[in-house]
Image (cartoon, one colour):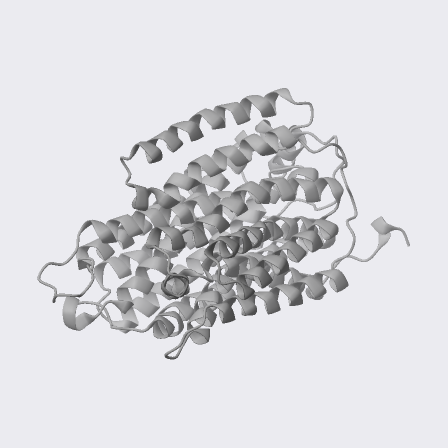
Length: 497
C-alpha cells in the first residue's frame, strides 16, 4: 500500500492532536496564577516578572507562522516532534531553575509550542475524511479553551499551602509535554504531501520583527506608560516594519505568506474574528479571576476567593462547557455553515458578557454567564479553522492557521493590557493603611462591557464581513493539493455550494 493509499486517521489521531493542542493552550495561562509567587521567590520586580508572560507571547509570534510554513514544506510529523522536544526542554529548564533569566529562556522555548495547533489542523486536513473533518477540527480546537482553564486549576492546586513552590507547576508542564510527544511519535502518520522548496528566511525575519515590535508595547505599555517615548516609538516602528514585510513578501519568488491569501476576504475577516475572540476570552479569564478575589469586606464587591477557589469554582465551569460544546460546534459547522456557527457563538458571548456587566454580584450569575461565554468560545474555535481550511489551498493550511493563531494571541495580549490598565486607572479611596490599591467596581463593569462589544463585532464580521463570499456550509474536500495550486483555486472551492 502506498503512502497516499493508506487508511485515513480516526478517533485516536484526533485525541492525540487534541492533547497536543491542550498542552499548547496551557503554556499561555499556566503562569497567570503564580506570577506573585515567582516574583517573591526570585526577588524581582513586577516589571521583571511580567517578562515571564511576555517572553512566551513574543516567542509564539515569531515561531508559529515560521513553523507552520515549515511543516507544510517539509512534513508535519517531524515538525510536530521537533516543536514538542523544544517545549519539553523549555519546561524542564523552567522547572529546575531559580534564575529569572533562565526562566524567561524556558518560557521562550515553551512559546514555540504555539505552532503545534496550526500543524495539528494541517494533519487533520490530510488524514481525516472530508465528511468528518469539521467535527475533528472542532474537537481539537475545543481543547484550547479547556487547556487554558485546566492550567489555571492545576496551578492553583499545585501552589496551595504555606510554602508554595512554582516549580511544581512547570513539572506538570513537563509531564504533559512528554505524554504529547510520545503520543505524536506513536500515532501521527508521516505526511502524505510535502511541498518542499526554500524557506523564506527574509520574509520570516521581517514578519517576526513586525510582530515583536507590535506585541512588545502592547504587553509592556501599562508598565512603561502608554504615552512614553518607548511605547509610541515601538508602535511607529511596527507600522514601518509591517510595510517592509509586505514589500518583501511581494518581491520574493517563494514568499512565506502569499499576500493574496492573506488579503483574501474570508481569511482576512476570520483573522479579525480571531483577534476579537482572543480579546473576549482573555478578558473573561482575567476579569473574573480578579473580580472574585476582591475582598468584599473592604471593597463592597467580590467574593474574597482564593486563587484555587477562583480557578475551580468560577473558571473551571467555563472550560468544561467549552470542551462539551466543541463537538456541538463541529456539528453546527456541518449543518448551518461555519459563518452562522461563528455568529451563533458570538451571540452567546454577547449574552454572557451582558449578564456579567449587569449582574456580577452573585456566584451563580458569574458562573452561569461564564458558561455562556465558554460555549461562545468553543463555537468560535470550531468555526474559524473551517473558514480557513475552506479558503486556502492545501499547501497553505499550516501558515494560514498559524496567522490565525497569532491573531488570537494578539487579541489576548491587547485584552491583558487593556484590562490591567483599566483596573489600575481608578482605585478605591479610604482603604486601611497598608492595603494595596484596589480597583473600583466600575472598572470591572467597563471591562466586561468591552468584551461584550468585541463579541458584537464578531457577529458583524460573521454576518456582514463574510457574507459576500458564500462560505461553504461544509468544509471543502481535504484531498491533497498540488504545490502549484493557486489562490484562485481556493476561491473556486468556496463558490461550490
